[in-house]
Amino acid sequence: MTTRRNFLGGVAFCSCALLDRAQGQTRPTRQAVAVEGRPIRTIDTHAHCVFPQAAARLGPDAAPPASPVRGTDEAAIEVARRFAVMDAQKVDMEVLSVNPYWYAKPRDLAAEIVRINNESMAELCAAHPDRFAGFCSLTLQDPQLAVTELEHAMRRQGLKGAAIAANMAGVEFSDRRFDPVWAKAEELGAVLFIHPLGVAELAGRFRGNGWLGNTIGNPLDTTIALAHLIFEGTLDRHPRLKVLAAHGGGYLPSYADRMDHACMVNPSGCNPAITLAKRPSEYLRQIWFDSLVFSPNALRHLVAQVGPGQVVLGSDYPFPWQMAPVDHVMATDSLSAQEKIDILGGTAARLLNL
Image (cartoon, rainbow, N blue to C red; front, side):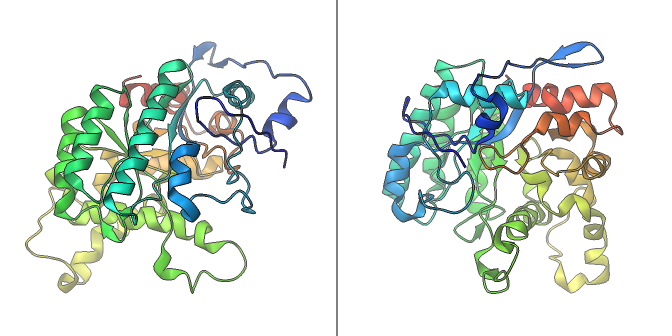
């Protein structure tokens, strides 16, 4: 892996050698994308960055420079180099997020990390509004503070919502203590981008070959989070809440219909005080999902399960999971031309008010 280090505006990105492969010593030409002759703007809703000043306050919880995981060195490069990578990927705009590793930190330290993240994100996006949009960070240890942070990020800093984990240090987001945050998100039209951090409780079973803590753990983390939001009535209490789930929503879209039978098979496992407004599987049609499911057949199934209007482009860059996210969508023959246009950028533009 080739690593380059330069600082610009306190933002860190990783080239993951894509730039070297793409340009071969020369900068790649920005590739316009068209569907049936119609030029479109492509918007990657799942792209990461870190801000070194905030990462320094995280200490050992920040991604270590020596990590063997490709991309986690978060090499700080010039913004122009990130543009070159985006050009090679045929991505016109990235919606950036910072993974929230501060939930276990003391409230005041977490608030300082969040402040740095949000100020830095706003500065970066304001400097390059045609290439970057951003999700804010939140101090969810203190929901009332998170409400204030979200409102400031949306109204004053120009950010598009918030990137959150799949739970807050083991507390599910369906817990009523978070309702004020979700109510404020509804009021502001903020998108909540759920990005998992794994299931620490299963660390013992994840040992062995295959990096199962991420391979299985991350999608499982999202699956559990979404299931709680559905079954605990959170999405009924907040019907206008805009939830975007990373990695295609984990496993939930692959077996959602099983949820419709659970309380019938075992009523004692369900709370009679919670009466959902519709079948559990139907709530997937009010959640958005990124396209990071790897194959055209998997994308076909995701669209069939949740609806074509609920899927948006996602790559997970700088982590090299899907290095050609636009090509992946274009290769899905089951999609109509309009569905491809929407997934590649149209839906995200509407969802995020870009």
